[in-house]
Length: 117
Length: 112
View 1 (cartoon, rainbow over the protein chains, first blue to last red):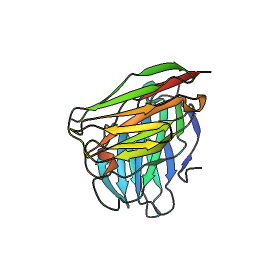
View 2: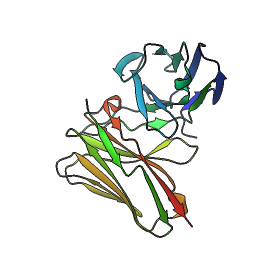
View 3: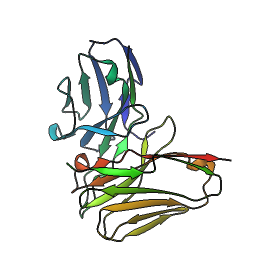
């Protein structure tokens, strides 16, 4: 158990529908990142929140949105779903870097597997 | 934008053989991280390199960061079946991991 909790683990839905994926970061971590991993693909960065504020945006579609709440959990909303949105969605959290040139180390959750039929 | 290329995409080895995956960035990096994702699992952090020419070892794994900080490699000596999975590099600019770019990964299979 990485300490990052994602729900649901699996989700099957139809095209055109809307779903919400939920993530609770590790205790003490203020940052939440969302990634999309399609079949046999790499990790595509979607968005990063730090303590409730958006900090970085990747190739996130306009149909997708996210937010981080005061209790630091985050939700990723996917709407007008298409077949191509079927993927594994990972949430990761990180603690602040103490100093130097290193990047935040990501702790990933187990992922939410979305299937769009 | 920043691009991180990782090769090879797949590598099949016999148990006991060595394995190397390479990561190349189109831009100079501040840092590079390596993650391992077991089949059906999630990425797990292995190591981070920040210095030019840095070499770090973890048991049978050796990680290198190039002198120009544009490339990196992960070498596994005498692979074991427990090494199977996909190895990702993530090249970073600064401390914000959201600014890091993941390579597409190298999937390693090990034949016993």
